[in-house]
Amino acid sequence: MVGAGIGGLALAAALRRAGVRCEVYEQASRLSEVGAGLQLAPNAVRLLHRLGLADRLRAFAVRPEAMEIRRWDDGRLLSGTELGAACEAMYGAPYYTVHRAHLHEALLEAAGRDTVRLGRRVTGLRRGDGEVLLGFDGGERRAADVVVGADGIHSAVRACLVRDAPVWSGETVYRGLVPGEALPELVRDPRVRVWMGPGRHCVCYPVSAGRWISFAATVRSDTSDGLPPESWSAAGDPADLVRAYRGWEATVERLVRAACDVPVRRWALHDREPLARWSAGRVTLLGDAAHPMLPFRAQGANQAVEDALSLAVCLADADAATAPAALRRYEALRVPRTTAVQQGSRGSARVMHLDDGEEQRRRDGAMGAATALRAMAWLYGHDAEHAARRAGGRSEGTRGE
Image (cartoon, rainbow, N blue to C red):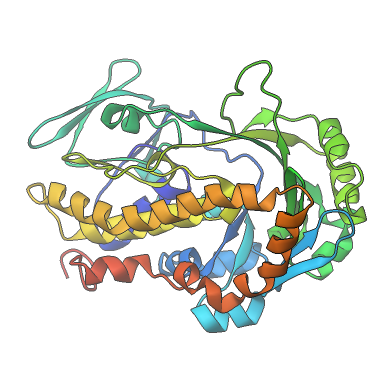
């Protein structure tokens, strides 16, 4: 496995549970996750519970009571989706908001720290009939029965399979964490709050058991100096954020002003065109390496976890001879769903950022029914692990049982 992010560690944990040995190669010399929040929907949370993370999630996650979408200037409620107990009852798992670093640490423990090899940057791979030879910076080589690229939007493994490039969205997101005491009412009444306006939107929710409020605020980017590089960790200027959201509803203005006292990261949003195939022989892709998506449906990490549990089922019953067929089965299971989510995330960007006018008023009027909790069944109700088992993976248990 190449890449020790959320998807790679979820796969390592799932393979460990199934009794399948794996090694994870990570180019960083030490593991650290940039501070940011994640929304975990029931389609991923139920799978994380099966990996043994239920108690850890309850300890550090927040279970929001609802998701609210409001107008940018006066805060008028446009739609609300009930979450909390109603979501858990309907879909069998809660909706959580979490600090990314806490989830990463929990997955690392579940995967086993001894499975991760740090400071290993992949420089190439050579596919053969019976194995894949990985080359690393410094000249090291390792042979593997299967290689999984879980190494993000700039995947070195993907580059060995497909000739394509990231697609610039025209949007930049400023992300960060502000102390919960800066806006205590957002902690006392935990919700995913979204304000939509012309050309931009702002999202916030509490994480870390309410100690922090994670925010993500989009702006349209000036490309006069060329296209910005895709990066999670570029420093952002909070003053730019304050200017971009001047005149917005009072809570948004308070939020971005509070961001002036904390580190803010600037993330230039890219995705890639969906792939019809992302496996070749004994090599496959997972998560952002396979289907990098814009964050406007908050499903990137969720789909990576789905990939991981699906792929683990397909590999658990395979041996060296049948591994390529297992990867083809995994790909066939996942490509249609991830493509739908990827394309839906692209479409959401335009819809969320409409200028005030007739189209915006039609959108606002239609939002109530479209965001009902039951309408999310196709997304939240999906069980990727069970789908893989029904399609021919292992039915139950672990290797050797």
